[in-house]
Image 1 (cartoon, one colour):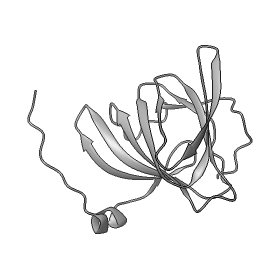
Image 2 (cartoon, helix red, strand yellow):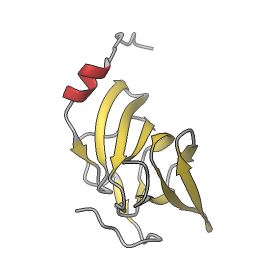
Image 3 (cartoon, helix red, strand yellow):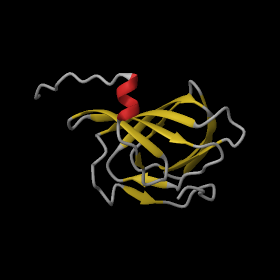
Length: 141
């Protein structure tokens, strides 16, 4: 295996990193990546916002909620559930899972999620996120 360089992102550095809009409409701040293995990012959703429902073609994710409250809807192989999200909750989004999330309107602020994507998100891909029929009407642009 090729040696990976050390990387560190300090809080002040994180604030200066570019912000992107995910295909589902969430705000994403990419933090770190290990080439070919995985990437780390922070997702944010304003109070009352609802993402578009999607599934991923090649990546899967592990989420850890750090702030706010909301819900995650996910469906896989005929199984479907809604999970309450609050600080300290961790969830998985396995490959091919349809999912959608929302931030509570009366939450303590934005819903923030630290996520690991494996393998790393394919930059520039227009086919990674596939539209799905979700549980809620999306409100994001």
